[in-house]
Image (cartoon, rainbow, N blue to C red; front, top):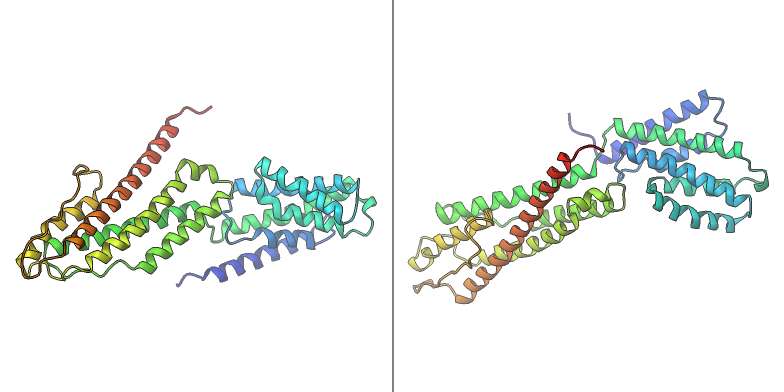
Length: 334
C-alpha cells in the first residue's frame, strides 16, 4: 500500500482532531463555546512542528499564561490598546519561560477576549472556563498528531545528513573504481539532489533552532556542521567539474595513465580524511601526446586539499559530538 501524501496526512489529522474535539464539546456541558477548542485545534495542528510531550506542555502552559495576562490587562484598560499591551507582555514572558509553542493560541485568546461586548464583566470564572476549553482542543490535537504519522525534525535532520554521507561515499567508490579498475567514469553527483538535500537540512535546522530542542542542536554543533557542509558542497562540485576535464579512459595514453594511481590515492584520502597524514597531494604532469595542462592539475590539487580539509573538519565535529554525548550519558543522575 502506497504511503499517504503529506497533504492528505495533514488533512486527516485536522479532520479527526476537529471531530473528536467537537464530540467532546457537545458531550460536555462545561464547554459553552465550541469554537474555542476548534480554533485551538486549527492552530496546534502544524505540519512543521515537532510534537512531543514537552511541546504539548509548552502549548498548554503558554496558553494559560496568555489568558491570564490578557485578563489582567483588560481589567485596567480595554479596546485595541489593551490587546497591544497584552501582546507586548505575553510574547517576552513566553520566550523567557520557554513556552513559545503556546504563542499562537495565547495571542488568539487575547483577540477573542476583545470580542466580548463588555470587557468589564470579565471575571476569573470566565477566564478559567475559556482556558479549559482551549486546553481541550490543544490536548486532542497533540494526541492526534502524536498517534497518527508523528514527525520528529531531529530524526529527519539525522536522516538527511546520513543521505549526504552515503551519496558522497558511493560516488567516491565509483571514482576509485574508475581510476583503479579501468571502469567507465561515473556521472557527476546530481547537483540538484545534493543542493535540495542541503537546503532541506538547513531549513529543518533553522526551524528547530526556534523550537524547544534548540539546546540539542547546540550540543550537536549543527551551526558549525551546516557551514562545513556548505563548504563541502562548493568544493565537491568544483572537484568533479575538474575531473570531468580529464579523459574518460585513463589507460589509453601513457602520459594520462600515469595520473591514475595519483588520482586513486587522492580519492582514497577523501574516503578516509584522517588517514594517510596531512601532506599535500602532488599531481605531476607527464609528457606525452595527451599531456595534461599543468594548470588543470594544480586546480585539482587545490580543490582536493580544500575538500579534504572540509571533510576532516566534519569528521572531527561529529566525533566531538559523539564524545560529548557519551560523557553526558555516563554522568550520574542528579
